[in-house]
Image (cartoon, rainbow, N blue to C red):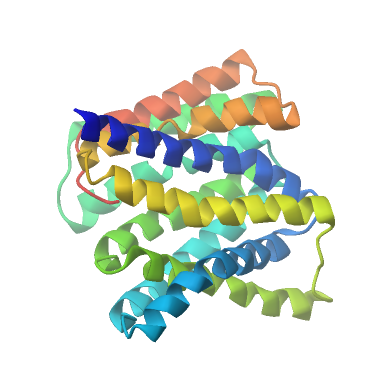
Length: 282
């Protein structure tokens, strides 16, 4: 029982950290553009993970296959991060979190089409999620640019989940290091656009926090799932939008309207319904 409680506590910490990232993203993209946000976050995360990777290198324990799998997965991760940051600059942090939660629905659709496993629960979950997003966006005049960009990002996050399931059989830290490393390639786009954007001290501090989330939340996730079955863990992860709304109210003073709350609840309900048929994607 003690180990199970440790597992749940770890997964709740993971989900809380992920949820807290959305108001932080909103702060950052209000100061620098989405391209700068993408590579700065990746660069700072690599700095945090580099000591571990250097130790593994000196011990001759570098895993080439893990690094290659991480780099492939990093393409989807980078595009998801960029689209999410870009979209969040046009919508609220809570909206971004709720819409990002749709990535679980896209994963289940992938399973139905590619792996030929389908159920009516999956179809119901998709309908509920789409209606939830509609309810969520109506207070802002419908589905706008920000919502569509974050929605496109959710497709990339779904691809990332599938790729993680396929490639992450080795050292999770080395995998994460390689995956996040791809995002630093956006420094080239930043340089070509004009000049490399330098964040101010406040923005840099928030970016350091986001880098901490990228490196720490994954470790909590791996530890927690040693003791909690994956189908239960997936349900815990769906609390991410709830944490995001909570932190958005506290950190940046966002207001959650009743209709938005209903939309968010519907989206959470959709992924809970879908999770009943989920296999291990994390």
